Image: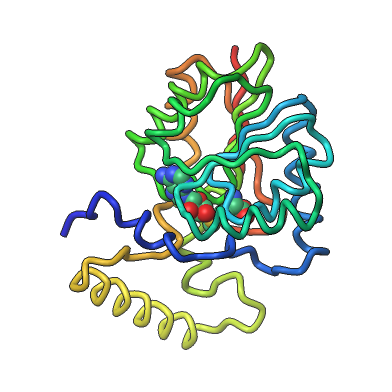
Length: 234
Ligand SMILES: C[S@@+](CC[C@H](N)C(=O)[O-])C[C@H]1O[C@@H](n2cnc3c(N)ncnc32)[C@H](O)[C@@H]1O
């Protein structure tokens, strides 16, 4: 059964949080610190799929001007509240998706980033995203996709291989459970996995190279089954 075009838009339309491993400010600030390390400077930043600005408000402490983009009205509503609470006057929010975003921009950026978002795009959509993003990237800029689901590690994480108290019986139960969830989602025409698609880093690298970027990838510090793709123009 094929994925309806708006399946993720529908899924996120009333969601309010980015689904971080822990929602405490202490954890979010550590996650943001790791990401800021990889972003490594710049003055202006575009955060695609900013969600409720859980990371963006931390980035705002290090950048002069920021734009957060998301296609979920409820996420942006939460983002506005958070931005006001944290008194971040340097953030603008735009309601748009990976296709409509570009016509809403009137400036280019030193950093274009997306955290936990790329898994909701197909390879073709990622290809087009990088192509469009490169037109809005300043000289020496970087595109950084954080927390992409690694297709080699994600299945192992799903069946509990990384859990502290795992054993063969638990793994077999999880495989059965995952299989049942996938079948039932197929019948209901829902996403088979609410975390989206996993992508092999070498395939993302191929797309990046095609558009003139050199890509390095590093393991995510806080999610053992995710990686970050860091792209710089060659
Ligand atoms: C897992 S959340 C991560 C949110 C945020 N980046 C963070 O780390 O807290 C994924 C976000 O991407 C947004 N999103 C997914 N696909 C999108 C698309 N095609 N266009 C715009 N936003 C999208 C969702 O609405 C959601 O807010």
